[in-house]
Length: 410
Image (cartoon, rainbow, N blue to C red):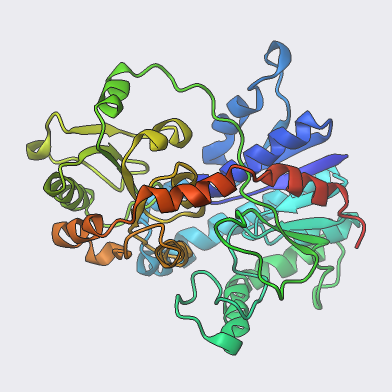
């Protein structure tokens, strides 16, 4: 089967597709992975992992757009994004949507598997008369009465919860004009609904979020999509730091809004109150250590391999992205979630409600006092380990690939 995978966004949007690309290629499928420019080189390098003679296991196609550049220019503030929408965000998204159709038409896959941001995948699938599989990275599209759509509210609304999913789905309406043009260029009707997805895959662990009873059969809760992490590059300083114990791993991934030194000061100060040493992971620029806080109890890295590092830590402070949330729980350590936007409050409140994390500290209210209080309220690691043991049995990529292989059977 020729499978086209299309994704866009941050590393948390790309890594699951990389994992599925590896799994599908290992099963003998012909795979093309489309990613935006900032991830092309890394994806091509990843495509050669475990390949005989260094030949890539799957093809990587470049989509127009660079989400990292947008974040670097304006941060993650929704207000900044709103101000820059017409000048920066909309043109970049239009280019990405158009290039996704171009890649699909050139590769002519048997099935298209796509991230919700790649709205034009529906156009390509209809033009090619091929099934498509929607990847609901976080629960935002399939309505349920059990909880509201991630990113809309964290307050349960009972029978009104399904209405919140209409709000989440409406976000794509701002690109209606681009999609109408693409439909016209593809020779499709410019109005009316295009065929829906044959399957919807939710790469979330059922150990973390049980499957809602009212989801339709075509929505599959697969478990997280992961691949074995490569052996960590030799880093004796990091190894010694972790070996000394009592380490708090603190990082906010792609979140880069606000003052990175102020945040680092709050985290390091709070950790020292609890005799914790700090591994400060700067990511896309969300943290920066002020010079006066340097010491033997703080180590700075731009990125770390979660699978190797987190199990050796006592706790974590993170932004609550879906991938990081799974990684922290899978490592069996409690955490403090500092949500910034989108689905992050959903995961923050879920972890706290499940007894896996302290009460969330919203990013706008992050200070030393609040972080110190949250660290004092961390649950025991034993409670997290129970869920981690259940997550260890997930085979998310296997379940996803099975659904993709049977996507033509509706």
